[in-house]
Image 1 (cartoon, one colour):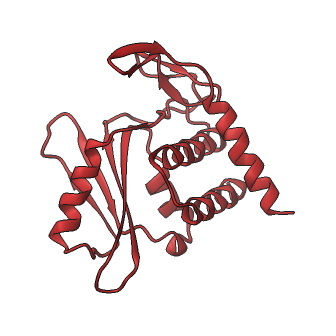
Image 2: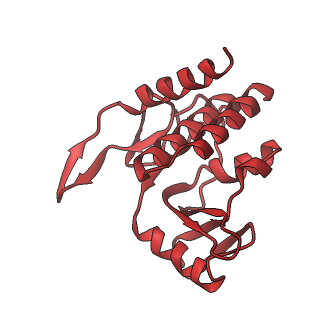
Length: 194
């Protein structure tokens, strides 16, 4: 478990040091989720997909605080089928324990994410906020990717990804490039220790 905490801490540092695009943020979150699934032997950890409409949920919450929210987690259950888990003003430098990192990166039922980077005009600080759609899936222990929900398949990195994803109005069968991204992320982490 100490190894997973160290790797998560390094991934958090990498996430914080990037000027993240949607794709980079998604890759880093899925890399962290893969590591969590492997280290905790979670058989049904879902691969996140990026959903731009979750950005509007974040902007709504940021407007309510005039762009300067306290660090907190908000749960929105206004949709009876899907829970929105909203992490406002995430401060990676304050994530010192495994539980806080697992709360952000983990959660087998998280299916989609959105990300917004903004600036608090009062303090000048950058504000990093994340929103997730979360289903009520219980954690199943076993080899990563061995107990994927119906309609998904195990990816090479041990997550449960959709068999088909919509691209430009068409469904495409997905390849196994996520494993290459994990290898790249782990290579970056290994290089930091040298």
